[in-house]
Amino acid sequence: MKDAIRSRRSIRKFSDQVVPDNLVDEILDAGRWAPSGLNNQPWRFAVIRDAGLKGEISGLTAYGSIVRSANVIIAVFFDTSSGYDRTKDLQAIGACIENMLLCIHEQGLGGVWLGEILKSGSEMKALLGAPDTYEFMAAIALGYSKGWPPRAPARKPLSELVFFRK
Image (cartoon, rainbow, N blue to C red; front, side):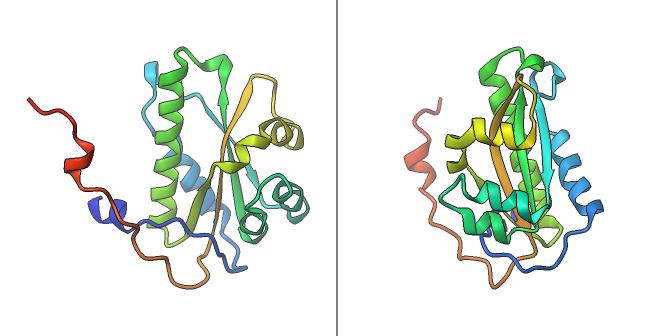
């Protein structure tokens, strides 16, 4: 697990090789196994493969080329009607997304968590026909990587991150 955590990278360039549906389902399944408060599982997903729809979505973000080149986009939503504590629910959705990213990596695929697109949350909801109770949280672009993965980014030493031990 440590190796997977340390070797996973944000992949932003994809080949045009098709990701099979069974692998997409494994990714979604990994997400649903994330911990959530009271096991409320507040995440909901939209799976986008359609080139025309990806084209529309690409216009909602500065990272449109990533969206267009990805074989699959998974839009992640928070179903507010299933929530009980917003902070815990959002943390659970973050864990869900990380589970999916690790599963993507394990399958030999590349993926990236797109956050800048959040500024277009209402447009994403409208494009995907999401219910009023759904709040857009992130988009994950994924596919087979084109080229070598980037080098590991520098990490701050623990001495800068841990502020208390007793």
